[in-house]
Length: 128
Image 1 (cartoon, rainbow, N blue to C red):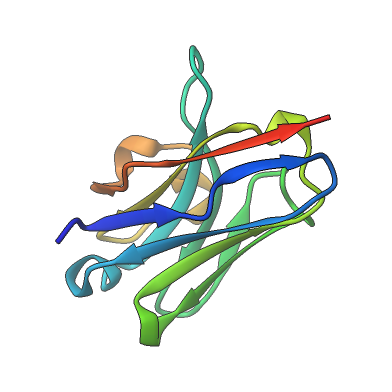
Image 2 (cartoon, rainbow, N blue to C red; image 1 turned 180 degrees about the vertical axis):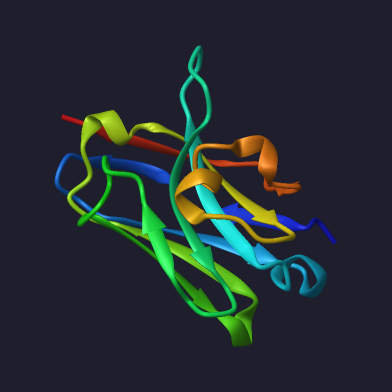
């Protein structure tokens, strides 16, 4: 079983919503931190949102704060990224990631290399 499998991407108009899902194996979902990153061709991968699965605390990049919500469903071994009021600049490949060990969420979100497990990505395209 792949450690992380994303789904839910698609093409939408600006202002619309999408919900991304990340299905995790039982082993991977037990990792303390899970996060969503995004990447466009030619640019570095950037952190979008992170959740501490033990206490449920969350942290967001300023670019999505107030529009995106990261959440988890422990019964389904799944995390979600609800994306509202989408903008063309949100267009990217979105990746789910998991990390073992501690850390400060704001710092972890800026360090993709701190995450051990990655999904294959799901494309989000927002047109104006």
